[in-house]
Amino acid sequence: MNQIPTLERSTVSEYLVRRGVLAADSPVAVEMLLGGVSSSVFSVRQGDLSLVVKQALPKLRVNDDWFADPGRSLIESEALELASRVCPGSAPVVVDVDAEMFALVISHASADCVNWKDELLGGVTRADTGQRLGEFLAQWHCAEAFVPSTSRMRDQVNFIDLRVSPYYWEVAKHNSSLSRITAGAVRRMVDTRHSVVHGDFSPKNILVGNSGPFILDFEVAHIGDPAFDVAFLLHHLILKSVARQQSSDDFLRVAQRFQASYVEQGSASGFDDAQYLFTHIALLALARVDGKSRVEYLDSAQSDLVRAVAVAIALEPPPTLEEVWQLFERDL
Image (cartoon, rainbow, N blue to C red; front, top):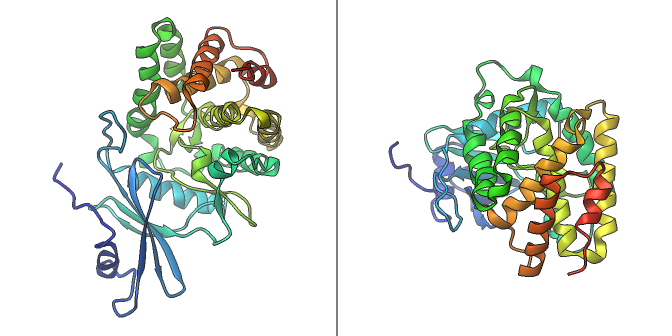
């Protein structure tokens, strides 16, 4: 693959003018947004127009070598178009797609939105957000019929590169006792191909505001196993609950509201096998302390707790979500 020019803060406005997205004769304000590891992301404002520009990176910004096809930006554009169809207003609208630069221009979130991860780590949980996310995810998982047979979302290579290899196989490498369990969970997951999966359904990719949750970062979207999205959100809530033990009951209520609304929408497929789901939660939690993308907010004692409890759950999953939560509530 030829080297693709990387967009910089100093070049974004000129690039958007060339693409016909911005006017050439009006001031532009550009800000590089922080927090992502897989893309360069910029906030761009010109008059009343507010946009976000994303350019997928071939090498992710993590300590270990982690490479992925930047063509995932084209997957994200397809997924966002689908979200606009099945869940209008829940995600950014696509403004421009550049297949040569692997760049995507999308609408900006409303000014009242804040990042849900930041709120959770600050102790603000918003149980109603859990309910709204359950509703969204149930609709999203049931949208497979709207995905054309030729869609890039039907290819799981991106999911393997960005989730299976750096998460699950890293866990198996660091925890030899879980090799068989990990391989079995991965085999079943990649063989399950009946739902539209977001692939990065994490609090950092969820904005909350007056109009409800606004979902970002669809670049790992694919047709696959709905249990992955459910486990991905729940393991993040558990890790933040460990970081803020004093708010553990509040985090559990968010998870319970999420589960209840997801099931009430008639899409129980992400919860229909509790032991399988909890195995994924355990493996994903381990990946965030032993994998290539480790969370930054757990101290060493909390990481040790997560590691010990997650291994125990993977080996013998408890029967209910509440019991999973209780296992992570040990005193440090």
